[in-house]
Image 1 (cartoon, rainbow, N blue to C red):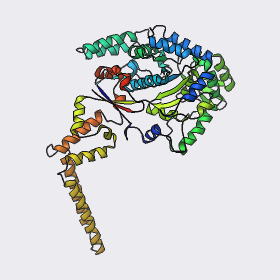
Image 2 (image 1 turned 90 degrees about the vertical axis):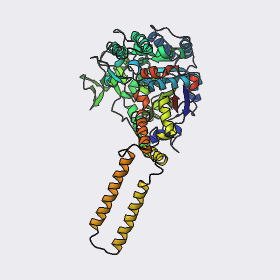
Image 3 (image 1 turned 180 degrees about the vertical axis):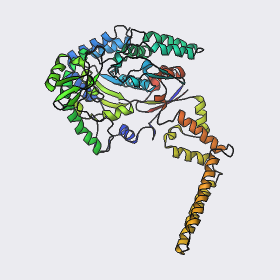
Image 4 (image 1 turned 60 degrees about the vertical axis):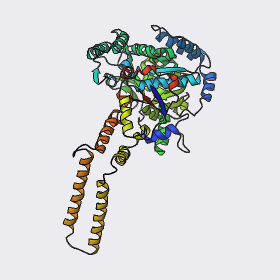
Length: 524
C-alpha cells in the first residue's frame, strides 16, 4: 500500500469550501479559528483557567460509566487521566451512528481527529449523535455490491434502539459471501456487538473500540442527564431567543460575503423527550404565538414553564443540528472540531455565536478525504496519461485532454469548425450584396453542419468501429463513475465495513497520514 498526500484538487470541493479551507476571505473571517494554521494556544489557556473542575469530574465519570462494559486500553486510561487534569483538552469529531459505523468517510473523520489530538497532546473524542431520530438515513448498508436494510419498527433517538435486526443483516452477508474466510471471521466478531439486548450507542462504542481503542480515542454519548445538567444555561438562552438572534446576525454577514447558508435558523432549536433520557419520541419544539408547543406530541408551555423544566429536567431537552456544537463546547474542553465538507459549511453559520452563548469556538478543521485506487485502475489511469489530481477538473477539460492525446490525426472537428466559419463569411457577403431568398440556403448550410457533428460524435463513440479515442473515452467514463464521481464520491458510496474487507482500512498507520485537510491517494 502506498499513501500519497495531495492538496484538495480544484473541483474536489465546492468553490466556496475550496477557498475557505485554504484561507479567509480578504477583510472578512466568517469563523474565529479556521484551518490547521490557526493556533489553539488561546483556547488551551482559557480551558486551563476557566473550565470548571466539577465539569471535568462529571465528564470523566460519565465516560467511565459509559465504558463500564468495555476494557479500556492503556492509552484510553492515560487519556482519561489527562482529561481530569486542569490542562486536559480534547479534539472532537462526530457522526450520526450507523450499523458498522456507516460510510468510509467516518474512518477519515476518526483518523483525522486521532492525528490532530496526538499533535496537540489532546484527547481524541468521537461524539456519537445518539439523539438523532432520522432512522431512514442509517438503515441501509451497502456492502460489496449488495444492499442490506435494517428492518425494525423502533422510533425515537437511534442511540436507544436495540440492535435486534442487525444480526439478520450479518447472517445474510455470511450467506452471500460463504467462501471468504477472512470476511467470515470479521463478521462473526462484529456479530457479538449487535445482540438483541444491546443498544446502538453501546454497539457503536464497541465497534470503535475493536478497531481503534489502542489509539486512545474515547466515544461520548451526549444523551446523558449529568452532561445536560451542565448545559442547562445553554438551553435557557435558546428558549429566550438569544441563540437565534445571534446566529441571524452572523448569517447576514455570510450572505453579504456570498457564502452559502445551508441550514436556516428556526424560532427554536430544541427537541423534547417526554420520557427524559429513557426510550421515547424526540419531539420538535415550535414557537406559536405566546406559547412553545410540540405539535406532534400535543405538549404546550409558556416560556417560563419551559425555562423551569430546563432547570428541573434538563435530560428532556435535545439540541438540533445548529445548537449541537454549542452544547458540545459547553461540556468539553474542546480546541478542534474535525468536520466533513457539509458540516464545515453549517458550522460557519455559528461564527461569533459561541461567544454570545458563553462558550469558546473550537478551531474548525476539514477532515482528510481518501481515494483508494486498485492496481487495475491505476493501469487504466496510466494508459490515459492522466494526472490523478487533474481529473477532478470539469469533465470537458478531461475530455478535451483525451481528444488531444488520442485524436491527433482526426481533423473532422477542426474542419467542421472551419467550414462553419466559412459559411458565416459567405452569408455575410451575400447579405451585403442584398441577395434575396437566402433563408433556405442558410438552412441547408446549418443542416450540413448538424449532420457532420452527428458523424463526429458517432466516430468518437466508436459507432463506426472502435478506435483509440472511443476506447479512451470508454475507459474515462468507467473511471469517472467508479473513482471520480463528484455526485457520489467513493468515500460516501463505499461503506466502512466494505473498505475494511477490500483495503485493510484500519491498518493504515498514523505515520502514513502526514497531513490533515488533504486528499489521500491510496494505491493498493
